Length: 83
Length: 302
Image 1 (cartoon, helix red, strand yellow):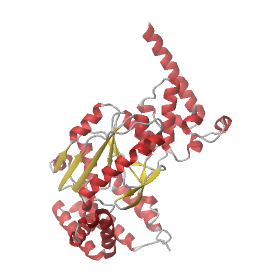
Image 2: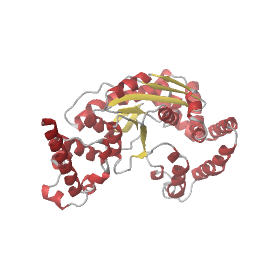
Image 3: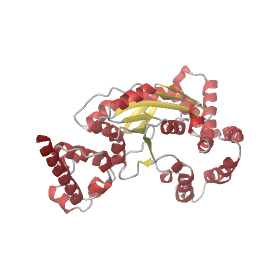
Image 4: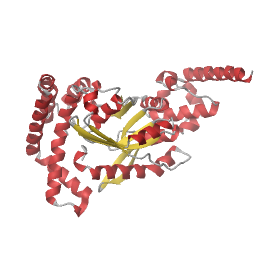
């Protein structure tokens, strides 16, 4: 998904080998915002304004952890809404 | 040898004078006396800056064509050079004027366009150029309760400046003058895109300067008679966030200013960011061109 959203010319395993996402984006901060939209569409979650900070995009592990946490919150909210 | 290779230039002397003795004088002199001093400096610079006036006359002629007489072009070029000085003086005066006093000096039109755009809840990109009243507009928005910031370039990254300016004078300028304005956001910041997105999602306002190529995404278009590069990264953000684009012009200074908000731009939709840019950048370039032609001597980047 990341490769598609950012139109990157690299292979998936190269992303996994990269420690910092900055290395992938270079100085292009607009690409990160396109990644935000891509993640939101892919996982049907919304990243709140206050969470839009470089901290969650610093590396793939942190980003994955954040998305997982959002998905868990969404599942809980959906379950509460369904009761 | 370019000025970037020099350690010091004549320009540095002017900047040093502005940043130290003049700035200190401004902090103690009555505001009207500072305005008078700024006016004198403006006329002196206008008399001395013959090369700059000549370049401005050439650009004005290219932009305005044959519809304007030589004497009008000459008068416009004088006003451009004069205002290049007085707007720096006004930047210092602005620090001393309270928000309430400032609001009383302004003539604001089209504010309903900004308010209506904010009602959509997706944030607003205010698109403008470097006009004389841009700092006043920023103060007006702040004082009127619109959460906003402008995206600008770091002063210390000027490739045409001397080493002294880039290493010492520009950082000092940023520290004592620029950073006193609210929340400066720099295009060089790695997270500038996230900062803009955050502000838009908070339904805030982001001021974008279309007349300078401060972006990693640029396109070149015909503009005022010659080719010019335009930043388009913000348009990709408009595409992803759905923010509303409202053109704005602000001319004048803290003694009297006019801010005009224009009707939100009807942008053409597209599937990809690149296509969105290609479909809409010409519309925005034309808007900026018409804003400048309406007030050419207030455009600081002529």
